[in-house]
Amino acid sequence: MRPSAVTFDLDDTLAVVDRSRASLLAEATTRVGAPPISRSAYLEAHSSIWSSETREPIFDLLLDDSTGIDPAELASAYRTVIGEHLSPVPGVEAMLDTIRQGIPVGLITNGPTEAQLDKLSRLGWTDRFDTVIISGRLGTPKPRPEPFLAACDQLGVDRSSVLHVGDHRVHDILGGRRVGFETLHVVDELGETTSGPAVARDELATVLTNRLTPVRH
Picture 1 (tube, helix red, strand yellow):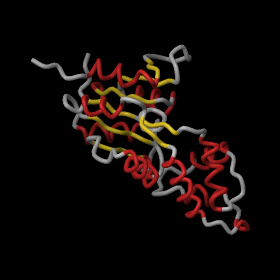
Picture 2 (tube, helix red, strand yellow):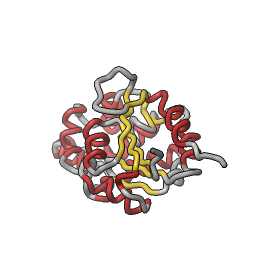
Picture 3 (tube, helix red, strand yellow):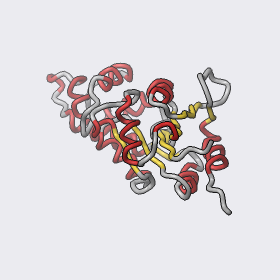
Picture 4 (cartoon, one colour):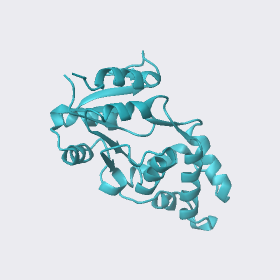
């Protein structure tokens, strides 16, 4: 059955960076003269702070006062580094435009508000979605139901008729299914262990365009 709306995750679903996140974090700390921060430490701090405008509170947890490094400066540097290495997954821009000719399209993304809005601005996507739900602004992240239900409310659709597309098994797939969404798991390549319908990232645009192109009468 054709859904009445589609929602997407952003990072590693519609847009990707061309280097590992650990290397991008290392570059950001180097730019501001901060001590090294491991990716695992960053993710642990990030998981404890969801309601924020920037990554400043995250880096405030990670930086010792003795370093003399301003957490806001490091947050800005990391945002800039990510933006410099961020690009759309091939074909998804045309895919989004095509899908929106027939049904509304939303974005549901975890992250600080300013960081996620900066990504959309750099990609030229500020007007590409009918609604944008950001955990930093909402105060609650995926996989909790609130982001998914907020998207339904803003799109004016019933949860049982929404398709959610994302790469994270828990945040996107489990979270979406818990509220009654249909889900499509974006993976690096097919053959990975999944718990339901999946698509390889480089085939995402083709698969969804074929499935959701408006029917012409």
